[in-house]
Length: 206
Image (tube, rainbow, N blue to C red; front, side):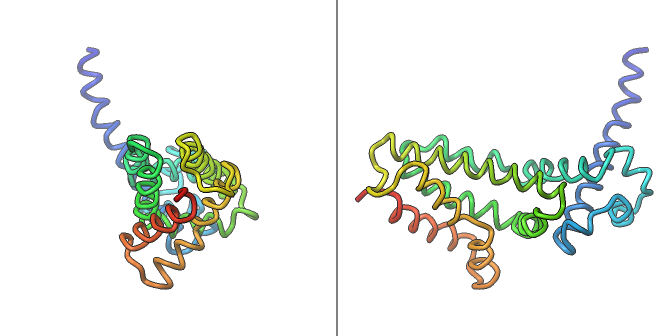
């Protein structure tokens, strides 16, 4: 009986996962097209072609939906895999180069969503929670890079770990990425290559 129950539950679970993924895709599309403010349970239901009740079966609130969405985006865009090469780098300078390229590749995929969240973070509590988390992890990643440069004795004179971390946070901001990718038409490869050059010349001792 237990084996039969598992066989029955498996397709149900698979359908549930597909339905959940479809709702998250719908929410992402709405953010990219119309901004975070357009994401309501009713709008997501309409975009996904389901009832609003079906959305509530997967997400108890808009806040939960948006929180789950960003986890879904990170998983879909392989955030962990893209940045794993940084920790595996043999030295701090190589890690800095790899970071510049990984950041360019990731942001090319998620920039519309990230900019939409940043734009309303001061008025939308759900967006604010995500934006705060995003800035926290950006800062911690940056600080780990700068601390490694410092510990290996190659952080350029005039910088401390803290000031270098803050400057890197500014250099990889959404506005800079948007200017290069969208307004100036740079390719992802160009952004990664030239950002790596900027970071080396700015933070690495000669």
